[in-house]
Image (tube, rainbow, N blue to C red; front, side):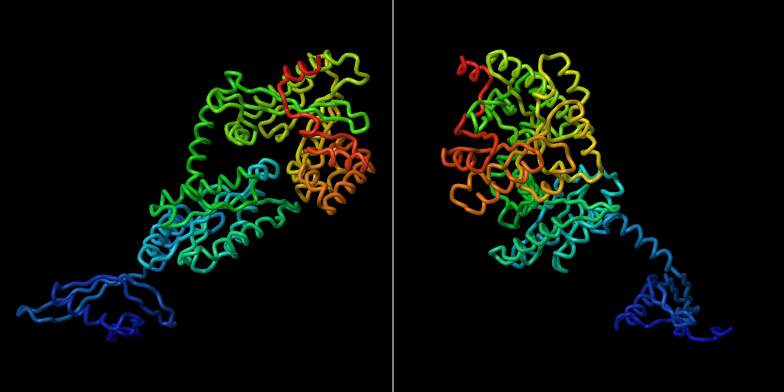
Length: 515
């Protein structure tokens, strides 16, 4: 009753552009109808969007007689469209733009950079060892880490930048309007790296992660979105291959490296089948007697064209291909065979030699099981106490107890455990008493610097004293000079390993030298 005989203006919100009325009038008189969206208001004053169809009725003489307007509230429709659009363009977990919206903004950013003569930077960010979070803590914990990582990345970038999640644990940042010298990009990358390096609190558990970041620039590296993405991805992979927790900028050399990596990945499964792997053995000496007491088994790939390849050139590819269990089992068996031959050759030695074998993936992470090792030992003449499994500090960052249980299972089988590269990460010291270690290997970086750096010399002394206080024996890695040897002897170190005493060699060469 309140609207009867009232002008339609009563329900109009009058938020249209100034020329809207003139446009509406011309359309009605030219075609007799108009339709579109007009903001209306309710009796309460609340605004809502309406879809309006207007028609002009003329009399017998063709003169305008009246207007008929039919409208409907499309608020819910617009909300539904907004939800659909957001689902299509945003990642539901992190609420960051997804790949679709990222590509749209990247194309737009490249066009703007070319028009304005400025640089555009693209950052590819990949979380290091994220798969272990899912495996050890479950996917809910992994999702929580991804959400927090997205939040931290977003806080590090400018409001004009776009942070997006492409897939899994891979994020990107588009930085437009970058100065010609690229200033600002390194600062943002460093902020992101530092933010992701801080501990994550997940399900009452503290998780420590890091990230690898690759950067590429338009137009310097590429002007096509796909090509620019490839450049940033290659730089990110180079950072990951260098050990992670690093920032790498794309260079043309990386393109060649990527092609090599892809070729190796294709050839790796055949290398396992064709027996192209070999072991080299580096001696470890007692500093008291300067007698060889153990050897470290080191994996090599005897590539038919590229020659002998070190593990850092192919192990990451083997992990991605799910080949580590097969390789680890082969390494363990060949190490036992080699140790039998070494002990036979040195039968008069008072104590049997020992061998150390590197292990990066515990049972359940595509690695070989402890039961398999026990079975292999049962078929050999080697006692479990003569085999030392080497693990790195990165493995200790697991907080679920699964790695601890695995290590206790290893120890219960009679095998010994060594913590290698001690000192390169912050996690080693708190866990020394939690895990059943027998041997501590000081990272070569401290040994190399101890002759000219008093701080590193003090650190080496402290590590040795601490290890002895915990009942552990100590091996110094990377000993290359007689001066280092003498300093380690003075510090009370038990064993040493390095080029001063012998390089890694095939078993045949070692036995030939011992005859």
